[in-house]
Length: 46
Image (cartoon, rainbow, N blue to C red; front, side, top):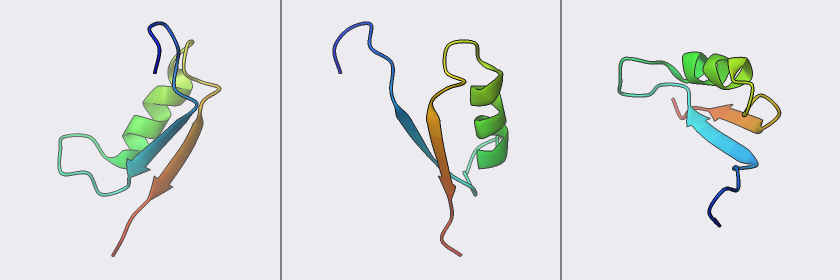
């Protein structure tokens, strides 16, 4: 990725092993004025 370019896609695991869930990450991206138009794929392997 060249300097200054934004990603076009975020792939997020629903069951992240952190203090945030994949849903919370997706919601945060939608609230961002810069990243709200980015495609988001949320998946999980149960």
